[in-house]
Image 1: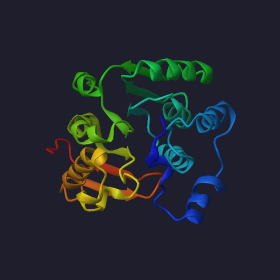
Image 2: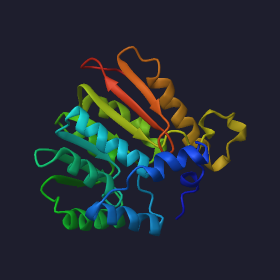
Image 3: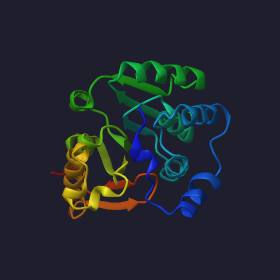
Image 4: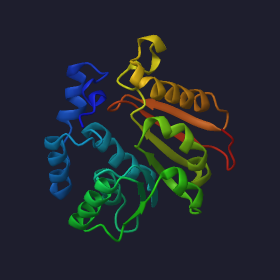
Length: 227
């Protein structure tokens, strides 16, 4: 199903062309998966977000990553590659079709030892996890981000980073709710609840980046945080 929000960029066309198309696309097998996803209109992260994600993981020298929302396994594969052989990605998804496609992706990429795919609803899976992570990437149902956040903060190491994708809702997130289509109002309210929870929180360092449909970056400054 076509995700209309993916095709309503917030940035001007010429800036979008610079960050999305003039930056190098992924190469090798990962590039083939990326291009096939574009052809099939599969909602993977756009190239500017993928480029940033690869760059950022290398800079923070992450070794343990948690992902919520595997889809076809593109971003998990990208992160595993960026970290190298000593890095590990744990990724969660509940959709059978995506799980099958992701497993094929990991096999094709030769990354089955570096990526653990947990099948299930993140709401149920997250409380069972006991490891700590350097980086957590949320790219799933936007209305669930605020629900997942407390557990993600529990699992994140101090000074670790949570990256939350698609937080602009095609630029409508700051509109008056009456201007938002009724079908999108739950997401609208949940995303604004997320902003309310983190932007002024005294124990979080937060920034917003205009990548794709918006990226929210959250760094945890102390061990125990209440949201």
